[in-house]
Image (cartoon, rainbow, N blue to C red; front, side, top):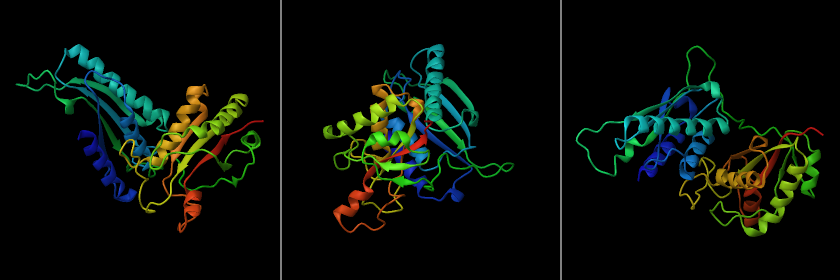
Length: 292
């Protein structure tokens, strides 16, 4: 119920254009009892914040951790600080400039006088992400990633050719499949992903962005629904799943990025057939850096 409430907040904000956004927004991530680390559902919510430009380059960001009344003051101070630090690390890893994080602090326990339940108070086990996207003294903040596709799209006969592509070039990652409405990679896809891994392994100067796209949704929708997480971040999650595969295989995370664009970059604007839908339902690789 808590996660669903947060998702409702995120989606309601996403319906308004950037110029209608409040100067300051607060988003909350709720943690399990005594756990300082983020789970996959929480990561998906942060992904959605970034994807929908709720955190912009130049935003003033404050990250404030809390704990409930269970445990000592010292224990909860440390726990709340670790929660805040883990959220900061995740934000920085996926595009937020560390200098934009003006505060990262753990406030410790929130006292609840008269409460004695051994289950604590779940709402107090949280991190608040406070975002100020508007400044009177500086130019308006910009999105963390460009929304206009300025790269050159090419067709490859083999993945091995990518090692000679220039930065900005994109190509479709063919023969990579996912079950309908899910982000889990189908087994028949791993032959292609293994080839991608080998090229990255053998070309250490190569950096890429993995970009997911979906079909068959309204152009105004942020993304398609991922039935594995019950959240509208399907294109993000599919790209992230490939990113996770490559990292697990040993590719350095700093050489990889991932993003999901929903239906913002369709090949076919109006899908009339399954073949046309298939062209929009894709994963692309963008060359970020390549020195050869």
